[in-house]
Image (cartoon, rainbow, N blue to C red; front, top):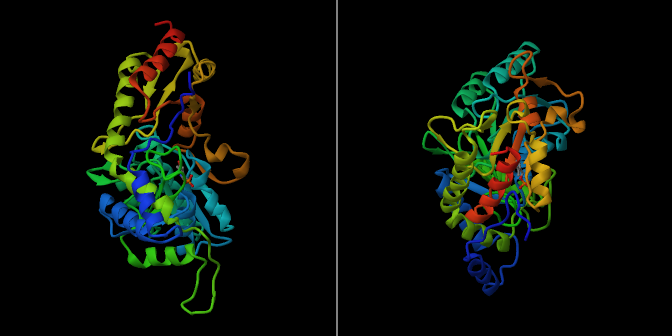
Length: 379
Ligand SMILES: *Cc1c(COP(=O)(O)O)cnc(C)c1O
C-alpha cells in the first residue's frame, strides 16, 4: 500500500488551466496575470484590502519584520509552540526573540504569559517591535484578547496564519486581525502552490513596501539603483496559477478536513486520557491537522507507541511541534510560561500527537488508521 501522509497536496483539476494561460501569454516569469489575480482573490476571500504573494510564508513573515524596521538589538515576541519558520525571521534580522507559552483552550498564545512579558518589557524600558501570534493546526488563538493586550502597549501584531487559512474567529477570517497576516502555500498546507506564501494587510503602503522589498528593493530609475537591502521573494506567475485553482476549492478542503477530524473525534473522544485540540466557541478551525493528547497513565499507551505502530504500516503520524524554547537553536532565550510553574506547551509536546489529516485521504484509509489505534488501545 502507498504511504499515507500527514497532509499531502490535493489538486483541484483546474491548476493546468491557469498554468496553460501563463504559457499562452509567455508569462513564465515573476509577476503577470496570475500573480495579480491570485493577490486579488486572496484579498477578497479574506475580506482584506490586499495581498502580496511571495515564495514562502517564511518570506512573508520576514517582510513584515522588515517593514517594522526590526533590527539588531530589538526584541520580538513569538509563540513558542510552533514550527521554526515563525521565529527564524527574527534571527534573520539579528533581533532577539522572546518566547511565549500556550494556553489549554486553544493550544495557542497564552494571554497570561503575553501580559507578563509585555509588563516586564515595559518595566525594562524596552517594548518589543512586534508580537508574532500563531494559529496552530488551524485553530485561531484568542485573537481579540491578545490584540487588546498588544494594543494597550502599542505593539503591532503579525498573525502567523500559515496553518489557519480558511479558519474563522467570530465570523471573520483568521489572519486578518493583526496589522500583518501571513499565509503559507507549502506542500503540506491546506492548499498548496508547491511552495509559496502571502502577506495580507488592510494597508496599501505595507503591501507596496513588501512588494518593493521582495523584488530586490529597486528604486524607480531606469538603471538598476538600490538604497536598501532587498530580496528575491516574489511568487512566479506559474506558481500563482496553481494557487488560483487551489483557492477555488479552499472551502471544500476545510469541510473535508473537518470531516476527517469528526471521524477521529467519534472514534476516540470518549476514551479517558484522550483529548482533542479544542475549538474555541465562536471560532471555526479548518482542522488542518487533527491533533490530540494521549495520557499514557490513563490509556496505557503513549503517543510514541501509536507513531511507531502506524509507521510499520507506512502511515505518517507525528508529535506536536517541539516548542521553540526547547530547541537548541533558541537555547538561553527568554521564555514566559502560562503560569510561573506551569508550561502548557511542554505538556502538549510531551503528550501531543498529529494524525494523518489530508483532505484526499479516503474514509477507508482513515478507518485503517483508526483500526490500528483501536487495537493498541485494546478496544
Ligand atoms: C508552514 C508554516 C510556516 C512557513 O511557511 P513556509 O511557506 O513553509 O515558509 C510558518 N509558520 C507556521 C506555523 C507554519 O506551519
